[in-house]
Length: 357
Image 1 (cartoon, rainbow, N blue to C red):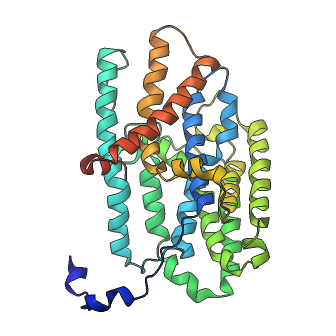
Image 2: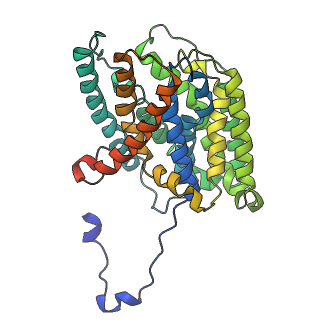
């Protein structure tokens, strides 16, 4: 409302003659990459614990790393058309978009898990302590506080990068090296933090390289030659990185999955970087339309997908069907479809739309 109060007066008689600033077209490749990353996350959450398909989770480990590196890259790269915000204003805006939904969905999943444990199982109540402010009450919610803190911490670099010019190269090399070093160090246990806050600590350690490489890519990208950034070459480089990292993950991941450290950090973060490089090539194709449309709702789909994955697995368990590939695949497909439909439905009403921003 304050912006409207100070808006300049416009002569409506000449308004038709004023030039209109066209809105930039959406990057279809980026939307498709977001959709692919979200589908990969759902696949991982579906097959973990499956005797038949758990190993295949290695093929989809790029999802979380992609969202981490992309969040930092687009924060710092300056592709947004909006005017820069102050650090405090940005922090508050990010808090409302990320942490408020995190708290609301933590309550929703707490109620659902409490009902399940009370009526269907004898697992006991969910333990509530300060760690839940970072972990949430479902296994996927930890990522929201993590990316919130990462974006707020990296925001001051947004005003620093334009002043560095060729110093960007030094910054990029430095952050890539730091990410590489972190990725080669196995996250140690801290007994005082295990098992609750320690899970958040281990997850953060796993994806710190993605944050560092997001900074490095944002710093170096404006200096790259157009033959790389404006042609399919950048997508080819990304595909090579993604493919090589996925092969590494297939042979290097430990099964059965125990915790995040069961997956090697270096190829996991590189796979996310590879997918981002592919997404930076502005390709448009009718073949990408369904995946790109799905990708425009990934935040909401990420929040709701366990509403379908966990109950479908519980139904199979209660029916004494066990875990089999012929149950896991329908569980995955139904979770993807129902999550998308639920998000579209929730966006039709103003109140529920707030839950899936």
